[in-house]
Length: 584
Image (tube, rainbow, N blue to C red; front, side, top):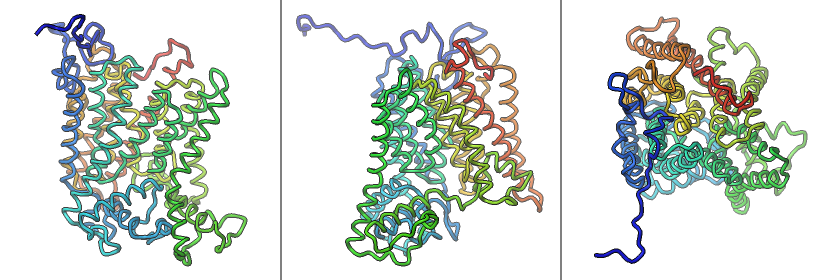
């Protein structure tokens, strides 16, 4: 059949145009013997058949199916608290919140039985739990029956709960990540195929995968909203970035790790190159409106409870309200709202829990190993943590304020999150997911797959999941831990499986000092696993290996913080356009 008059066939877009001639992002390396170009690491080789000839509408669904399979198979193993009385762990906590949010009046959500996994996350988590509890109760009401369902270990309930994590992640985190990478890589002049390589690396992050789908949590919902905020910044949609970031804060207060960087960047774009009062006011109003919208269902529920004369007698006054210089009238119309808001804030920010939780790889746990901190008052420790945190986050915030360029925001996120993780109050090991995500998305930037960046991103991720091993071991997740972490290291050409990122003569290679530091940390991690498996701890030091894990991890994380800070500083060009990172 003849073509219509004037019809011109559509030319296939070359996804990889120029990438063979100009190897700038680290996907190809030069074979020293044959002088031919070859894939720089296994993940490039795996995705090579899709290079330039396979549509993204085929590639991305295949990737999502494969990474989804790894998530689901991880979920077949143990979870936090399985057959572990009396408290049964995070799985029971999440299930319990689905139970209480659908059976109790809203005004009682943050007060109910605080000794048994009382609700201590912001309202968006409560709404999410309510929705999942309602859906689950239509399948089996016994799963979320008030009080009678406590510590339930039903295999079908486990399947449902695992499915809710997967669906929540694929509705929020996955699309947000795909859209962000498309925008960020385009701004960094990285082609689609190389961005797809970074996408696989991000979705296969071992720490995130093992914590959410193994240990059991919904961190990717919060992380997805934070990535959506990053994506909106890349698109220049600053008001939407405020909305999404408030959503991240509204789901988990851990998103505060990113808040200083968001504030500094948004303030910077309102000040430089010239002061823009209208933009500043619009950002402020949008943020306040987003917080109001976040709490609106909560206050509507309290209004309904007040209309129904739900009793508030016996509900304790939270410490925040007790400290006020004025007394509140329990009969006043505003009292239920103030009480509910005050209790939610008290539960969300648990200063009474202590400086750190369990053995975590930050400076406070490390200092406590050699100089016991419990001899000091809680107030003094809180102030010390505040000063240390401000000192660690001030430099990246100042840089992103003075140089508010959207390509620098992921680095600013990573640096401030490392500062919070290392220095702030009430940190636990799972908080390391926050600096790991923005650091890992650097793989999709200019030169992101070169060893100079890939090795640092790889070290941070391998060290991060390694510091979680004591937690994962308690959850009977040893096999998924080794399989997922070693697979990720193999795909990215990292120790202990591969040393391709550290070979001499590799384009975009590392300095000798960096190689020595990295390889010594990897040797320490492998040596620790051998010692932990075969050498019993002394009777008077039962936590010896766990403490050693935290100390080594802290040292490595400090290096990651310094690398992120220096890279941010050098890319900002505050030191001049020719400044180059000396830590590569």
